Image (cartoon, rainbow, N blue to C red; front, side, top):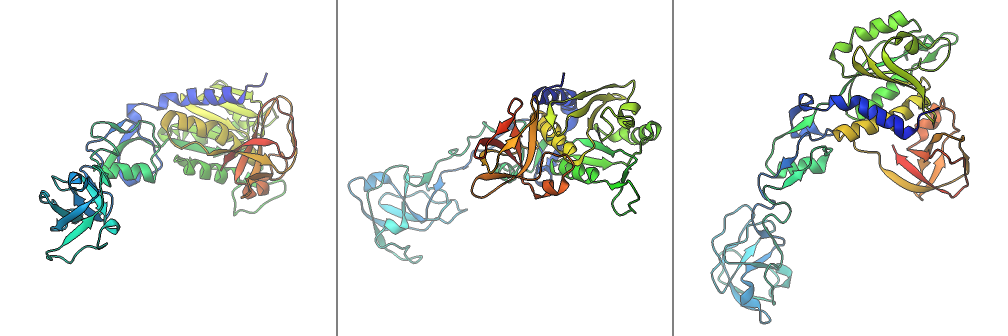
Length: 401
């Protein structure tokens, strides 16, 4: 009986779970950590903002002096951003810039456009300003109103994008502890496969899987080492892999995992703790999973779309669940532009384009060799097991690529 998609995804996560631990973390400068995930909680070493500051260009005031409908106050020296201001004396208002520290004694800011006159007086002038009724706290950003010192700023497992790195920089941090990217040994198999740029003989095809998977893995933050294409000789396959696996965390192959007569991966892995099985998914049903000489191993099918779907459905989500990165694919709901059919008892993944009008258009058929259709796509439509027919206009789950 075929394994469910959910069960196989969990099996991949279980396989890789031993790769998460203290030995897999490292300290990196903030920008070098882009796209990786935190290995530990980050506790805020300071509050944000670190001091009460002005939300607007305006006048710092004592609100109680304006509590009865407003009043006229004498204008004193301005408070620029970055300065340490003098305490505010009674009966005065200090011009203050956005982000500047609130002077001691003041508890509110009146925006300059609400003043009469609605402008800052020239420096050194002895002038006054009429200001409206103001409440305590108006236009003041309180210390710690964004985050308080000693609280968790980012939790372990958080994927680090520009916003997260910006927060860490605002907290004064220069480096962060993250999970090191997994090092993947990637191998394409098949006598029929030749590298792009070489002459294409009879019965031969160019290797698209290597480029396709390496690009997907690198986009997901993995370090990829590609091996030469292996033919259908098990001894050659084993020599290639064993010669380079000393610095790898994971071995991934494409092709050679079905039940045909020349399935090199199945033959080479005889005696290893590896299971070759069928997952109830189209495309990407044949899968290999286990350990090769003690190293985690995943065998993906040889058809290009099948191998990419396998990565997106199994390896990428497992990495996100274990290490926090890559972040999950954005998921939306959309309506089909056309009807579709799906085989009974299988979870189908269809290439598609999500249009600007919110309609999802299928690209190509269900065949796993249709690379041009994949290149036109920006999404995968997910058709759950048990659903065999959907009409045009039906709502479906869409993973954005």
